[in-house]
Amino acid sequence: MADESINARPVPKAGIMDIAAYVPGKNAGAAGGRVYKLSSNETPLGASPAAIEAYRQAAGNLALYPDGAAQHLREAIARVFALPADRIMIGNGSDELLGLLAQTYLATGDEGIVTEHGFTVYSIQIRAAGATVVTVKEKDCRVDVDAVLAAVTLRTRIVFITNPGNPTGTYLNRDEIRRLATGLPKNVLLVLDSAYAEYVPEEDYDCGLQLALTTDNVVMTRTFSKIYGLAALRVGWMVAPAHVLDAVNRVRGPFNVNQAAQAAAAAAIADTDFIEKAVAFNAQWRDWLTRELTAPGLKVTPSVTNFLLVHFPPGLSKTAAEADHDLQSRGYILRGVASYGFPDALRLSIGSEEANRGVVAALKELLQENV
Image (tube, rainbow, N blue to C red; front, top):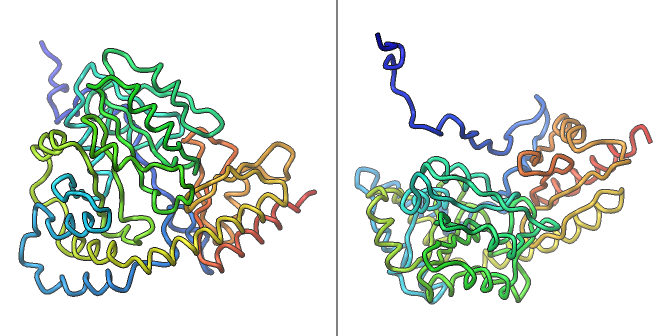
């Protein structure tokens, strides 16, 4: 007689329960006192006043479905970046777009390539699609293009690259990105996740936009959650070949981005003065934090983003885990990155002046204990 317990309840498809759920940055520290959340790479400047006003105005039309094509927002992005609106797709955060790409292009038996310190959502989406994750080692906290190309097999269908990297803050330059794109087989989709592109000051950086416009197998994704300050609204976008957009549109939900989010994002991307101020603020405090944190013996990976990967070398009075615990008790919430391959480091988002000065002072005090 068959075991009836097998049919006692719905069972997820094979592999789903092997996926480790994504763990976001912590939101709260010890009870009482001011809490500075420096764990999720959120901008300390908030959203553009123009975006906030557009969001408020959208409240008068809550009974209406949003524009499923997000035409107004796509046109706003197209104006800023001088690209055709019909090559843009809007998503419920760039996370949704990454998942749609995996769902569209991966099946059981296929392989998806990620790098060892890359965004964990890539591996989750590859596994959810029934495919196999192939993890490639990085070199000195940077994506190793040669190692990625060497990992490609006949089963490879997609490659996810974060550029700049998270949690490393490093980047691949224009030549490296183009060498990667041209070195991949034409049937392998290269996804360049450029969530932090707006913060990068280096002239040799390439977000992948032109590659996505001129090739058949490159996609660039972006987000409104970082420099634009719209993390609560979940808006992302991607530029992709027309045939990729056609395929993904067949599985995308018809009203995947709400109207208030679309309106706020369109206003945010048009407010160039606000973005310029955000870039300048971030650059100032990124440099200051790097200098101040290295003084007491910490090591900081050079970053082009709005966060720093802070390493705790052997010999310090505190390990990364101990410092994380003690900082939380003082109201400073950083991101532990052991799951990203850095058990001896913490990721620090660049915060307000008060938060930046406070966390540095707290760290210096902690590292002087028991010395």
